[in-house]
Image (tube, rainbow, N blue to C red; front, side, top):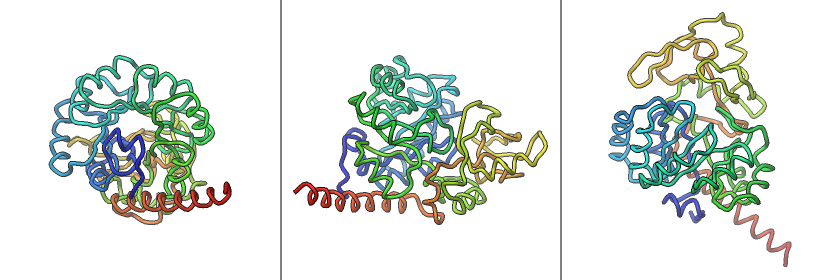
Length: 327
């Protein structure tokens, strides 16, 4: 594969595909994406510095590929965890807060690149201004928690005119054609979450994965329903909203995170891991509008290769057509 971009050169991966740092997804997903040539992302959410050190020890024992770490600003209580991430990651990125000079400098001091996921042109400009090396631009098509309210491609056109640093496109990307479109439009890479959720390595519950396989882009909804624990808009499968609405208030199940059993109330932010018990189908089943690309539960490495090789083929064919038009 020859999809070399400014992003691949910066982070040291082979293909311009970044796996989204999806909350409590298994670190094994990041490992498999990195081994296949992409940028595998760990989530630092709800971890202490010591716990993250342990995770990195396991990850580095299984891959020498490019690994990054993602943090959510509303859950960033002890900033010492950032030092651990910067020491072991090629890229540390942040989400859901205004770009912060002090956080950017702290990561740079630790030796890593900094990315900031944004949802507006204003945020993108600010991210570059405070020293971010990469801007991740998230469109409203994205699954999980969503920062902006605009479509990805129209917003990316404005951002590309406003900033000089590499842009990673995020939101609704799940097929080779979508990857190729984003790269052709000027993105240096793409960030993919939903497609990688339906993998054996993600650690998500089989019922959740089956629901992703059965869904298409019209089966998602942008909502604020699952806000117990974090009041922020998000995109989920509409069937999970419907299932939750039929239940009374209270605890609907449990999920094990970090060796601890955590009760899950109705409309909790927690998505169903494979450890979940109870009303799994009424938990937050995050999904972007690219969910229709999911036809089966496939290994993450296979998905990454399909996306990269397919996008490369499409881009070459499109380049040939463009040359013919211009000749």
